[in-house]
Image (cartoon, rainbow over all chains, first blue to last red; front, top):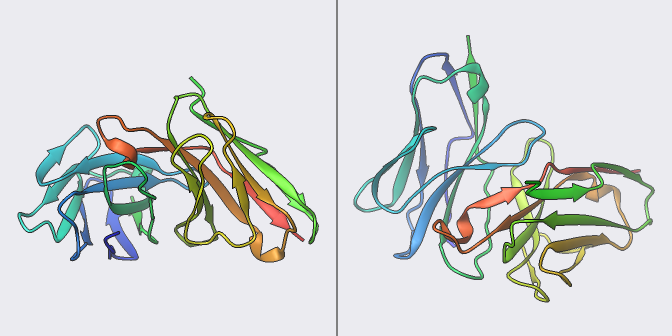
Length: 111
Length: 115
């Protein structure tokens, strides 16, 4: 499985756009990039997934450059409730794959 | 729709005692996972299962055993609890849907303390 590297922590203020970058230099051809969000005392929840270019949903956008060696999760106009840990996972979308989480990025949003 | 349910939510064990954590999912998912999360740390995979009757070791399997006798249930056992196993345990499940098995659904966690 591809190793991922993301910042340990980030700070932001309400209303700002937050971009969290994940490096995955040894990503394989059949790997997908998936981001999860975890609030304190809760299990992680799926946010967004992509393979290449840009993916957008109601929560976030995911930008993936052509070489796919990194990806950026973009949270528009964050609020206090976006304070959480964000995990980047790189894994193939196929049977038998174990989902390995790293330490994630702790985002703290202040007013 | 209950999703992924973990039982119990909290437990205190004495060193050397045994216990079983139950994870149940009602989404007919093929894959199930057990993770542990220590304070300030990410999730570490203990064991996982890709289908009924199958199990595989994850990153930190020592001291734990699992069973998947029914598709909807995944049991995590501690035969002889140690203080190092004090942690929050999360169960998850996933399918081969449009996002494949990388979209996992998590339970609410079991907080285990071993004294």
